[in-house]
Amino acid sequence: MAVIYKKTWPGWFDDVQAGKKKFELRLNDFVIKEGDTLVLQEWNPQTKEYTGRQVEKISTDVRQFKIGELFWPLEEIQDKGLQVISFD
Image (cartoon, rainbow, N blue to C red; front, top):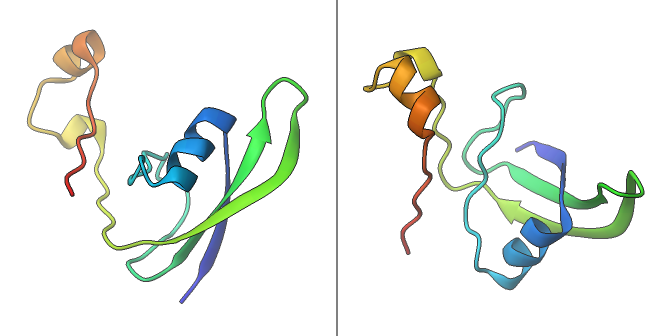
């Protein structure tokens, strides 16, 4: 299993650490599979430095898609945006 390190901003980091945020929406520019460890490192966008805090999560489901290949026309996606909805 792989270990992948990614930066995340403070508010999102806090929500992941508290267990309130149970998903990540990321650009598909790296490989991650079910069972891999995602290490989220808190990044301060004002100082442009890592804070030293990190949280590790095991990926349980990975879905990849391209915007142009979704059910909706690209114009509607650009106009309305997308939502990510998690379930417990």
